[in-house]
Each structure stands twice: as C-alpha cells, then as structure tokens.
Image: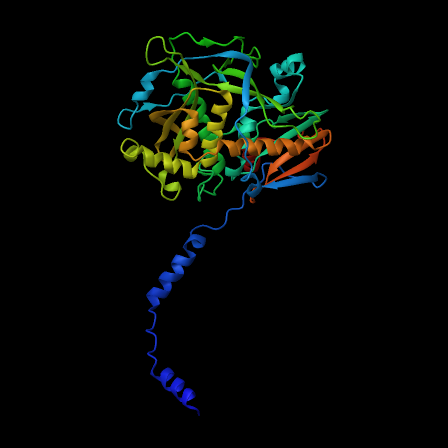
Length: 446
C-alpha cells in the first residue's frame, strides 16, 4: 500500500460518524414534505359543458400564453343608454360588525341575464349605419370572463357565433357566468358532500342570492331615480315582476388593427352592453353624481379555507387583511367585477361585506360594512394588469376572427390552465338537459 493510500485509510478510519437522526426529526421532515399533499387530495373539477365526441377542436390557448399579451386601454364612446338607476343610501356606510343590518330578501324583482344575440338594443344598434364598422358584439359579463381568464379556476364556456365577418359572443341560458363564485381560487373551496350547504355549487347560489339582494337593499326608497336616455328597461316582459333598477350603457371600444384587413388605419370595433347598479350624490352641492357598481363579498365560514379571518373580529381593525384574504380566495371574482366597472365607465365600486348570521345558517345574513373604491385604483390594489386584460381579449378575438363562419365554443378546461375552441352545431344547446348549477344538482338528487 502506498503512502497516499495509507493516509486515506487512516483519515477515513478517524472520521467521526454522523449523529443518528432521531425518529421524531425524520417524522417531522416527512410531515413538512408531504403536509400539503396529505392535507387534501387533488380536486378534480367538472367541466361546465359535456364535450360531445363529434365536436372538432379548432385550437387552444394556454394561460401561459395569455400572460404575455398586452394592449393599451382602448378609446371608447357611448352610443346608447337605457333604464334607470336609484340613488345609494349612505346610511349603509355606517354599518359595522357592532351595528350591522340584516340582509333583506327583496321579493318580486326581476334580474335579467340576457345574452348578446337576444338583446333587442344590440340588434337595433347593429343595423344602424353609424355602427357599420363594428365587428364584435358582447356583454360586459362575457368580456370580463375572457379578460380575467388567467385567474379562473372553475370551468366556464362562451359561445362564439361567426356571422359573415362579425362575431357575437354569447352565453348559454343559466350558465356559470350568471352566478357569483365563492372561494374559487382558494386551495380548499368547500365541502365535497353535495347535500352540504358548503358545497361549491351551494356556495355559488348563496353568493348570487346575496349579491342580488344587497344591490337592491342599499338603494334609496325615497329619492327619484336617475333616468337614462331611454327610460324603459329593454328586457321588461310585462309580467308582474318589477325590473330591478339597472341602467344599461352601450359602448363602442376601438381595439387594435383587425387581422386580415387591408386598411392600415382600420381598428377593430367592439360594441358592449354594460351595466350600472346605482348612483351616489356628490359630497358637496354642485358636485356631479357618481355612477356605481354594487357588489357583495360574502363570508360563509372562516374555517372553510386556510388562513380564514373572522370578519366580526377583524373587519374594523384589520380590513386590509380581510380584503387581502378575499383577494387570495376570490381573485377571479374581484378581477371580473373590476373589469365590468371599467367597461361601464362608472366612477365607483361599492363593496359590501355580508356574513351569515351563523356559520350553519346559509339563508340569513347581515351586512357588516361597506367600502368604496375607484375602479382604476382598485385594479392596482388587487394587482390587476388592465393592459394584460385587454391584450387577452384582443388575442382571443383575433383567434375567433380567423375561424370560418359558423358556431363555436370557447371552453376553459376544468383541471388545466387551457382554453379550447370547438366547432359545434347550431342547435348544440337547445336540449333541455343543458341547465345551470342548481338544476344539475336537482337532477342528481332525484
């Protein structure tokens, strides 16, 4: 054995053995490594639409691609307005957890969720010579889904009708777009038991109920409403139900250059129906009235999600923490609300904080507080990149304009960050089984 080999042999022999790792430390390390996987099994979400075998895939776009899109906020102009809005009752700004107000059930009010192609005003505006260059027609709810697509976790779908060189972006009757989600972007979104009040579908129904009632309750019962150019609600059907006081603004947005258009100066024009929920009087006499969108954040059970905060304990002293938790658990919802407010060009977003009377009572609620934001400031507050949102919309519209004439479906994959384009027949959703969340659940229960 050489000198070097002898040295190495002695060195290795003298090397101190490693201290044995205790069983407790081994278990602790394993727990840290696996705690997330052990905490909750991977949730497999259902698609908003059952894809038929005969539907051909025309293409797809990933969220990673959408994240790179950008566009300047486009110019806009109002071309029509109708309906009337009531004034906000500022007494609700004094709500606190210690002086809350019960959420009332507003009976006999009709809330219209009319799709683009069924809107008589859009049909009329489409035929006017002044709008001959408009190629895309949609509603603010549909556009907000597309613009905030990168934040979505649940599956959603939008129907694209390509008629000649024009696009009509539509939704199905009673589809997920018509409902307000709850804890969509939380790691743990609710109870898996379908009969539980905390099942994601039940939470969605509850959140929608709260939003509708909140938006009506906080309006003044004494002040005369603010009427738009055409006072009549375009969707009132003459039934006994009174239309909810909602104003509609039809606005044209000039996007970037349209694909396959010869004129270098031509810009793609989009006509969108937007909504206004209320109006607030200015602080001082002579100040302009402020148009508003009214939304309600709702607390079901703070223990449903990791890091949940009890609103009754923290809303007054740590409102920023409450809103930060809501942003984590409802990122997509807050982005869609903000984008709808910006599409409508309103001055304020009024947020209500509504909680259950008791965590086990999903039918009775109280208003714990309200808060106002300017839409642009709120977008910054929730880290919403508005230029990216417009870039996403423009990219999706450009893809749709490259499709042949016909009917198509944009479907967000329920378990992957991908949007797929399907070619579908004209009568694809005329069957009675294509229903909304609550109807689907009733069928399963039966």
